[in-house]
Length: 320
Figure 1 (cartoon, rainbow, N blue to C red):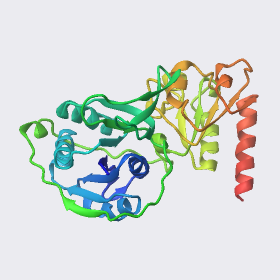
Figure 2: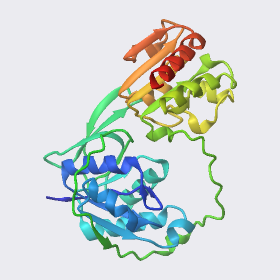
Figure 3: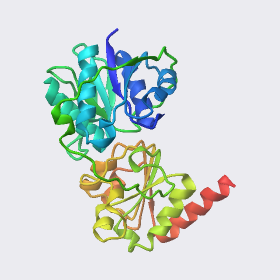
């Protein structure tokens, strides 16, 4: 069976959930070979083996921390040359998509971004995508080279499938291009204690109907009761009510959670493009004609200032 490279997203050896999802998808089209780079790379082996990695290629060097994405691109290119895989799978984070795009150019291959599913095909892996502002769902295949595919978080269930997980050192030689842009300083992002927006299983979002920055406390309370991430529409972000880093939509972040709750969001196509692949969608809006209701699984016509606090209270009471 052909091998499939999986780029590992980890923090000091702690593997992030989207990578484990990629291993599930990789097993559909071949044998997963994980590529872990940077500090703690060798410590990823146990988790990766538990979820199906037959082999773990590791490499650590100061360049991964001191410079931007090019060292990681060159390491992944070295892995492609060593393995000759059937495909390369990468999480759809901002950094990883840049790595994927640069890799595709270097190896002369086609690239598919933001896939939501993956299956084996007679002429190579076939990816499912939501395109044209989520107006269409397509089946896509790379026709040239080794497919490089980025996959949205929450696109597949994490499944344990113990494998050998043999750790091998990856030989990497960096070019002058790898050190062309140096990181001069880092500022840790302030933690909210909530899940990362793009990886969260539940997202609670607020829009124009929230009517003010202070009122987002209602949205946050519901999110915290559910252990969810907080999102916002472009209208709310442009009004200065919530940070741009939490914007969901075509010009913000794309999410695909198990549950998406839209509060006071009309459902403009730009917002729908960022959340339409959510598994279950719930909307609260006092306008019964709001476009968001054309999309939802469950809709509540009502004032969010009445509905959301009651929902939060009910969730908390059931937890108690």
